[in-house]
Every structure is written in structure tokens, then in C-alpha cells.
Amino acid sequence: MQLHVINTGYFKLDGGAMFGVVPKSLWSRTNPADDNNLCSWAMRSLLIEDGNRLILVDTGIGNKQSEKFFSHYFLHGDDSLDKSLAAKGFSRDDITDVFLTHLHFDHCGGAIEFNSSKDGFRPAFKNATFWSNEEHWKWATEPNPREKASFLKENILPIQESGQLKFIDRNGDRTLNALEGIDVFFADGHTDAQMLPMINYKGQKIVFMADLLPSTGHVPLPYVMGYDTRPLLTMNEKAAFLKEAADQNYVLFLEHDSVNECCTVMNTEKGVRLDRSFSFNEIG
Image (cartoon, rainbow, N blue to C red; front, side):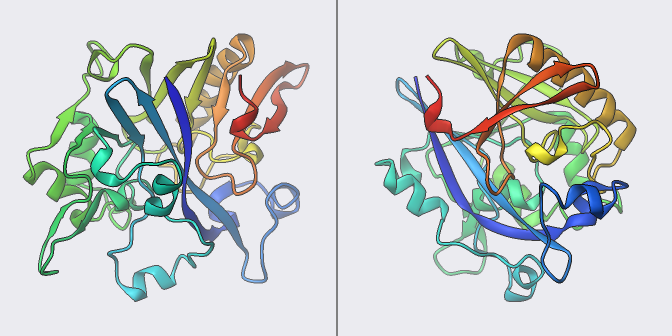
């Protein structure tokens, strides 16, 4: 098995929204904001190369939304999904599986593209199986008012219409289609039934943290996003997971941290805290 970091680009979000009730005087120490209170965030995917399987975890925001839509998020940087895949010697057609942690636009937008006539949509990975779960799929296709703006139907419905969608059973075998070395951790505080892949790699456990832990600045328990639908549940999920991560020395792969690709955490008298942050190529 080989793992590859796939950088799909950067965007900006309001710092207060990203840290909830935590004061700016505290969160700005790790995530400085610009004059408009916006912080820069990565959209970092992970590519798992295992035998004849090539699994992409999340796809970034994509490029099919309107200019007005993108103007709200200030996309920047030179990275893109296609450029990053090509740098590793791959193209979209090589992808066999697309694992979607959840269906918010910054995680799944790149899964769907315009068709050739630009009057409809099609999967951007024509040879891939797309993985979600029934609970989250229902949550995203029948959205609550709080999350409706993040669940865009053009990002979601064409996946099912293509016949390429499969579900992971939360209550059964939670391995990705029985793929050896990958298990799935479910979290419900950010959005219902978010899925975090846990990968056995070079004798270590690599966990793709998605929005349970967006950045190293979110390690302290009260540092919970304003976007989370159930912030108290997020705190409980973080507490349990980070304790396990500290005890077992998990490597946490950070999807949204604009500086740090990975980190580990440790137990202290004040609770779980950041141990160290590092680039992915330092692993193994």
C-alpha cells in the first residue's frame, strides 16, 4: 500500500465560524485571519494505492459552480485535483473508488462535473465506485435549513443517478468493501454519519480527520466549529477519539489545515493536547 497527498486548492472561511464560541484572541494564535476575519483553509485529499485499487478520499470543491458562488470562498493557490493527481502519475480515469467523508460542497464538489454539452452533470470519475452511507445520504438529500446551503443537489444526485453509488453499512462490516487495512469511524456532531477512514500503513494507524478535527488549532475540546449541527456531541466525540489517538499514537491526517498535513496528540494533565505536527512524507 502507498498513500499520496492530493492537494486540491485553498479557500477562505470566517474564523469565528470555524471556531464557534472561542474568542478570536485565542484562535488567531494558530489561525491568523485577514482584515475581513477570513482564515485560509486547505482542501487536502488522500489517495490510497493498494494493488489494483486506487481510492481517493474526498475531492475538494470542484470547478463547476458559478462565479458568484466561488466569490464567497476566495479560492487561491496553484493546486488542483487534476494537477495533483498528474504529479503522482495518475488521472481521474485511474480512480477505482471515491470515498466521501460527507457531502458538504468542499468535500464532494469535485466528484461531479459538467457533461460535454454543459447542460447536465456526470461523475468526474467514470470508472469509480462512490462510497457514502444510507444515513448520511438521506440527511444530505433531505437537508435541514442549517445545512441546506452546503448540500448542493448537483454535487450529490448525479452520483446516484449514474449507478456508481454504494453504501457502507454502519451497523455491519465497516471496512470499505472488505478492503484489508481500512476501517471507518463514524461521527455525528458535525453532520449526521460523517465517515473517517482509518488506514493501517507502515505499522501505524493513519486517520483522515475530515471535519472532526479540521486543524491543529482545533485540538482543545471547546474549539468546535460553528458549522457543527451538534457541537456538544462533537466535543464528546473529539474527547473519546483524541484520547484513543493519544493512547494508540495515531497519525491524524488534516484535510483543512493550511500549514500542517499531519499531527499526533498526547495526554497531559490538562487533557489531550497537540504533540507535534509534520508533513506526510515524514511518516515511515
